[in-house]
Structure formats: C-alpha cells, structure tokens
Amino acid sequence: MTEPQAVVDETKVPAPQGTEVEKRTDDTADLDVLLAEFDQKTKKSEPESSPPAPQTQPTIDPATLERIKRVESRLLEDDINEAVKQVFGERKVSPRVARGWLDQVARENPAVAQAFLNKANDPRTWNKFARSLEKEVEKDFPPAVDENATVDHEAVAQSVRGASTKTTAEPPPKLGSMSNAQYRKFCIDNYGYDPGV
Image (cartoon, rainbow, N blue to C red; front, top):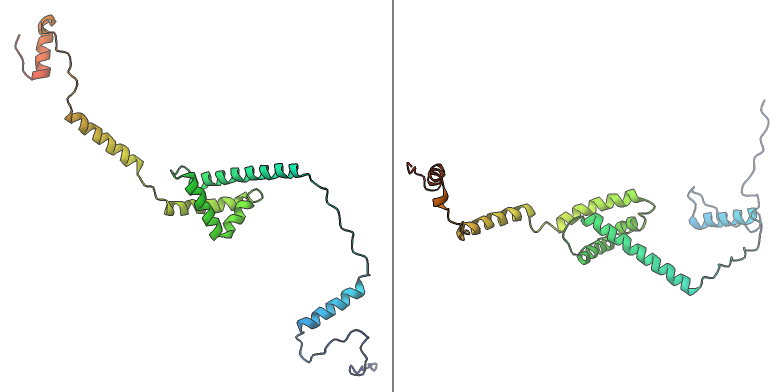
C-alpha cells in the first residue's frame, strides 16, 4: 500500500516578504524577472561588507614618463620599419609610400592592426597577415621594369653603338721585321690570300 502524499495548494502558500515576483503561466521568464531573482539570491548569499579600499598607485615622476614614451615610440618605429621590410621585401618603393600603404590597410582592416600590435605575443598570426599582405603588394605595386629585360636591352644597344662607331686603330704591322712565314700568315689572316713567298 502506498502512503498518502501531501498535496500542497500553491495558491494558498503566502510568498515571503520582499519576493514579489510575477508568476507567469508560460515557462519563458521575463528578463526583468530573472534579474530580480538573481539580485535576491545574491543579496541573501553574500554578507554585506564594506567595499575594498582603493589601492594607491605609486607616483612616477614626469621625466620618467617622458623617457618611457620615447622608448615606446622608438620601439614602435622599429616595428613599423621591420613590417615594411617584411611586407615589401626588395621592392623598390619609397619608404613613405610603403608606410602609407600599410597604414591605410590597417585602417581598413582592424584585424591587421590588431595582429601587428599583438605580434610580440602571437608572431604566427602576424606572419600569416604579412604573407597575405605581400600578395596584396604584388597586386597594388606591379614591377615597373623587368630588370633582366633591361639588362639585355642595354647590352644590345651597346653592341649596336659599338658597331656604328669607329674602333680604335691598331698600330700598323711592321712588315719589314716579319719573317716569310709570318708575312704569309699575316696576308692569309687579314686579306684572305696567299702571297706565295
């Protein structure tokens, strides 16, 4: 046999004082109701205590602050120059243009700026961005001159110029001091005939 269970009528149980929470018929609670319940639970569970006394920060003299700012500025400048070299490589682009391009990309894409500022803590992320920026540089700054083609062109031009100008005259041969065999070789090499000497 089962024991009789006590049935409680929810409508007759009085709510504790200060807990006037709206009862809803559906299961979805209103945000204000949830916040009120949270506040009530935290008030009961936390004993009231005085707020902690504010900690006083040590004072730093202005000269030290100025030195710190200069060091930070120099380090940032070095990091920017390193990023320009990393992204632009050996491209012949003015440093001012390269820095301006990087600045504009960082303004358009805050993730690039965040990766740059956090590169000391997460260099892998910055290196990924740098490689993708290298590809963007190739698109925005195509090589203006193919250096190999320029070298070849200049070599051809030099040879054409050399053919059109007179060569420096070789001193005339001293025919009187040549032997018969030397004279014969000279005539064959320079004039294409055998004197028959």
